[in-house]
Length: 163
Length: 371
Ligand SMILES: [Zn+2]
Ligand SMILES: [Zn+2]
Image (cartoon, rainbow over all chains, first blue to last red; front, side, top):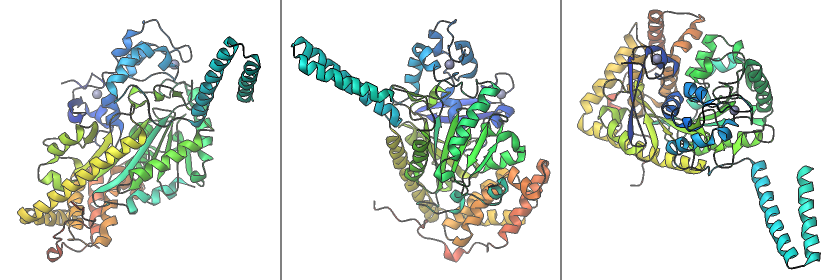
């Protein structure tokens, strides 16, 4: 039997792990099992290895010529490594990644911690959006004084963002 | 501070105290973070890795909790030193294989460690003794929040924190506990436990050779997914499951005491005998026998004051720890087996032989649950 990782050497270490109700069998050669820290039941490497396997196929939904403008990564590279090139790759290959990520995880959307700066800017975005729609309503209703007031508020917030 | 100080002293997670300490060896939480638009370590060129290392390392060093930390570039460490850190669970095996462009920062009591340019730009972990997932999460979460203003973390509105591998996006968190479950293994219940636990998306694993035997009866329970569930939810689910496993382990030990006391005492006696008198012992055999001694300690057959000594032997009998003790860089497996046996013999001199009269009728010193 061939090693699942290097797909070259003969597998001598056979592992069974149960993940989410499904039994996964992994066959590794001596070198890869050492490399992946298989003999260390406390390492995280194996969990990463198992959940990353099979990831490579899905990304092929993107055209083969597509390249990340920031890091130059292509889907062929992903197929080889099962890892992406940089954070921008997630935008570039979004289409191909979507299904794979959904299959891998509990839900399609992040619901945990977010950087404070991100939360703040999202809050401000929402505030500006609300003000802008009130502004349009005010203009439509020909309430020009109110409209001028709203426009000033928006400008102040935007100026504050730049500062 | 110097690496020698780290190496000379075992970490707080090994020596410390914590809830369910007898069964839960340690609790760990790891967070993965990356800098926006910088190539991930596996894809970056050397110069890019060095640049990221510089940025991230100087930010980590500024953390108040990392005052007087040990900080080093990986190329400055010998293979043996790296291996010692791996055996301590302070860096991963993957990280130990890295050189120029990767680094490590850890605090004095070894409860916090930061791997720079492992698979992600930053992987940081907190580790504590016993079942304290909430505590380790809050420790590492605080460090993350303190780093946030200094480092531009890649964050996506839908996918959360972005990582080199899509299997880590979202929280970027892996929480785990290392459990010592000899009772469940001896009573052939491990498969049943694994099956029931995994139904809710968590993973239990040990090394499955033939049958369900894991080395040293040590198992790790961890979350398997990182997207679609908040950090606190993941941890609370994990906690619930671990409490259940502890309960099953206690019951299994109780049952063994009632139904198979001779087998149990025989195993403990033999483990003590072999470890006390062997002159050559492999790492695997040592771990499995130490596990039985640990169980014997839980059952009052060995004095509780020797508990840390036994726990430390789990680490000290690992290859790199043996070699650094002997101050040699290279050693054959046979030489290590001899050295391991003599180290164990010497340490066990202070541990009196199992006192059968003291055997615990309640198998654990931990508080009984109210079921
Ligand atoms: Zn291989
Ligand atoms: Zn990219």
